[in-house]
Every structure is written in structure tokens, then in C-alpha cells.
Length: 73
Image (cartoon, rainbow, N blue to C red; front, side):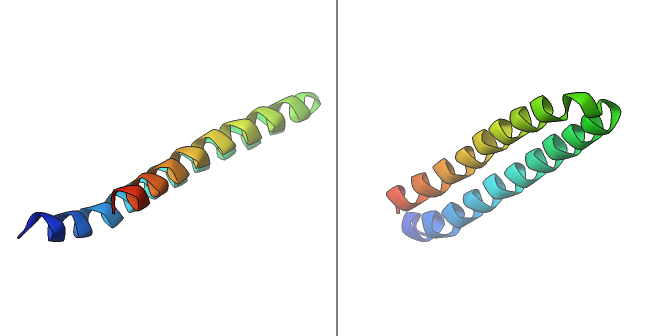
């Protein structure tokens, strides 16, 4: 297998792994936030704000992986 073929195969695979990791991280973060809001309804606003900021950072990492793949290719 020549290097161009290997890169063409591995770059989409890398984005898929990044998306999988992002999905798992988001699921854990949102699930934990929902559980925390259920335990402390008075703090739901602060918990939700922190969850949304954290979710944005998690999604940003996936977008960075996609942009890196596009720039390499």
C-alpha cells in the first residue's frame, strides 16, 4: 500500500474515532448534568450553563479534528 492510499484510508477513520470519542464524552457529560439537576433542582441553571460550555468545548475538539483532516488532505 502506498502512502497516499494509507493516508486516504486513515484520515476518515481518524475523524470517525474523534466523533466517537466526542459522542461518548457528550453522553457522559449530559447524563451527569441531568442527574445533578435531578438531585439539586435549585442549582439547575448553573449546572446547565456549565454543561453547555463543556459540550461546546467537546464539540470544538471534534471540529478541530475535521479541519485538520481537511487541511492535511
